[in-house]
Image 1 (tube, rainbow, N blue to C red):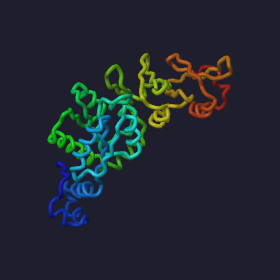
Image 2 (cartoon, one colour):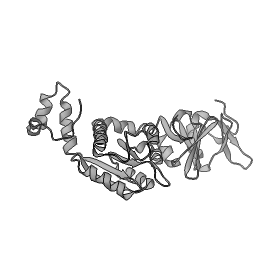
Image 3 (cartoon, one colour):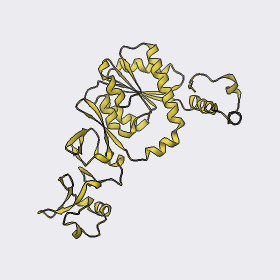
Image 4 (cartoon, one colour):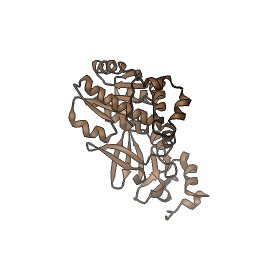
Length: 298
């Protein structure tokens, strides 16, 4: 069934919700009751992100002309957008690609699992299209665009939002599941890394460096965000600047300065902070630190 966000038929408007459910129980038209609630109670919360005020204003005007759209907020930078998305959790984001310091792709990368249901990229350059879809964008508006093209993008966004809301319970459950993959930009491409393949992660200024075998990938995410997103049964923080994959740990070594290093099967030795000793001890099943002075074979 194709959803419509317009005014519902007269028969549906006059009917009471319980009677609609009873009459439609045997068929797929039960969705109409959901659509009625969605279109007239939960209006779309939209966000427009662009460093050019005129471009933001034009999109805002178009959005406010649609009856299904409620709140429309604006952000003038990528960093501002990240904070606003995490705070207000909009349903729909129109996101400019080229912005100083933090571009549209950086915004999606840093949001991680906090992505809105529908993201539409807006740019004057068509060569970003493939990367936009790889990064999870629903649509791609090429400037300048006319009202008809904008309307097509908005219709797609409405359908995506409707589907997302209809599965809200399932989405809430899945949001608590650990991330199975991490999205990073590498050499001009969008790369999807399986979480289980990551050996260890280290903080690198404003980035996190993901070590995967002989390769490393820079990700514009904080260590705190990654720690919350990764599977706690598989990953453990051993230092304020280090997270390790427990399946890669071969043992613990006592260094000459009296501190412990975590020895990985890749050959890497990573410093263990005293703050994280006890949690790691529990995770590795060690009763006393004396057991860990030698490398523990897996």
